Length: 446
Image (cartoon, rainbow, N blue to C red; front, side):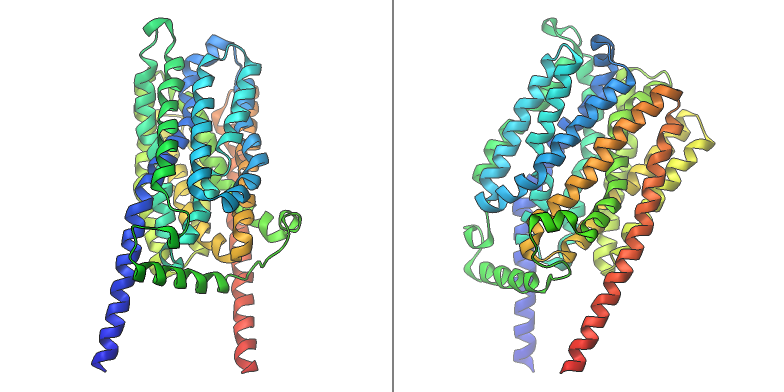
């Protein structure tokens, strides 16, 4: 008995040490990379406080320019993720970051709307594959029972980017006139260079698979490889199918619809909330400072929610409740038109949008087989971003331009989130029933 207890204790110690070493080796670096990605993706919102007037952009034109990022992202996300699976993370993630950094810097030199359209599309094409690539990469390294908290911790980079980036962007805008350039020129230049430097670092810091990791012991490599092999063999909710079949699979579209609500809320507010807050008479720096408050709250609570999902092993309700919180926050905009009220509404929406991500991606990765995960995760993200970013960011701008109301512009977002919340409950229930039936049939067969 004592030998068995010692063996169990040794195995548990090996697991804890391996997972801890993996997390500390790859997660902080990936968080910093994603933080820069989100800053470069969303800094157009702060830049708009000067850029729109300089370029003569209406709200509808600005909304279209912002949404084109997601069109490029949609087209290239699945091919990019498949390329990463074939080429390896260290080369492909490095390529992604260097290319988006270059495009971001080039945005500083646009002089007309058409050039902005092209560069926003190219930025989406360049960044495509980074997020689903990292989610796929984590399925190589992180066992399932740890994955929601790790994904939530990784994705804290999204609200953290806005929490950190908004005040920094506001301060950079105040560099207006330095060396003869406007503040928004410096914004794109100074926030684009870090992506290039991190892309170079990624090539040297990342290992493609556990068996390539020189920083793991032989025992740790074996435990992790064996564990991930067993888990991959069990992921059969959506088995191996062709890419065309995958894109037509009803569950892939259902998961994309579910994720689209949170994606739309986060993307839309990152682009439009600076203008909403600026409309209350705040200067550029104060706009950035106040805009950071909801993101700071979301940064903390999304980790708490991800840990709760892992601790209980529950994914469905942890996903659905956050979508309902987003919808409730958006609908409450009809009840207030004050600066404090708007900050509360933005906080509720963003807490829901970012807390949803950890449980959802843990749920989605568990529904896909290992052979389908690369294309499946990318397809979900691409379609969700097309709906949430490519369409909803543009819809918000059109409604706001036509009515002058930020509140009415939020209504389609609320309906999308309500639909997604209901969909995840229905789909999750059907998946649970299917697993129960399969388990019952397996036991009966024995």
